[in-house]
Length: 353
Image (cartoon, rainbow, N blue to C red; front, side, top):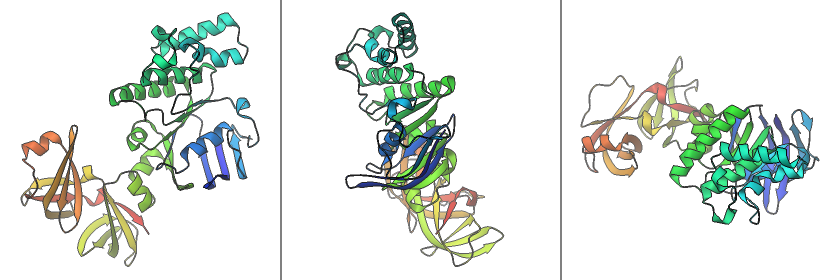
């Protein structure tokens, strides 16, 4: 559906460097990365707002590098909604239809249907300045899909919304993707949004593509330490393989031994990635575990965040465990008490360096 072929472009001091990626028809494709990485520049290049200095952009199999934005058949929703302040909600939603010369009666029917679909029909005569952020976002989305694009571009659509409104809007996006058979490309810095919505994704850091693929693979088996850190893997440990018996490797991490599954040979430097929810915590010496990696330590910090809590444990190195808040309280977990941690070898993702 969309292909970047070695695309490079510069905007002031920022450069997008030799980016090649493919977005398939029907993908819910996420472009993620830290602030200033170039995510929105990529999105705007798809929309036609920036022309590459080198490389090609293909849309639906045809090169569109020099094609004007209005001829690309793409809907774009910005983070700040970009609604026309002097138009009512109905006027905003119907704007694209009027520009395309749709007859008034037909346009009115289309707008009425969209207002009802997005639950904003009661706001038809209101102006954007009187709406909440969530209401404005729905208006912007309805306006974007009114012209029936087959590609929808979203620039951090959830970042300005409160948590409750975010949950509702995620449901809206899931239904839109499923029911309209849209190819959606969403820029975000939120790992949680990617977990909930993405089918495939790219990670952009400092203008370079550093990882791309199926969302579950990128999020759970990143290709580099840099990506692992960005996507939020809590425990990232550098070590050296000391032995490997048929893919069962022994890895030395600062004098502590871990067992993991990898083809890395003895002597290779590797990075171990362990998600906090894959670490099992038990009080005291704990019970016997089938996990190959078991160690004792002392709790140094407990940080509650809504229904979950992060427990940080010093076991010669600091490791993070995620538990429910109820479990933390039932076990009376506080700094200073001794615990046992265990993690299965199969739960450790190994990056060869």
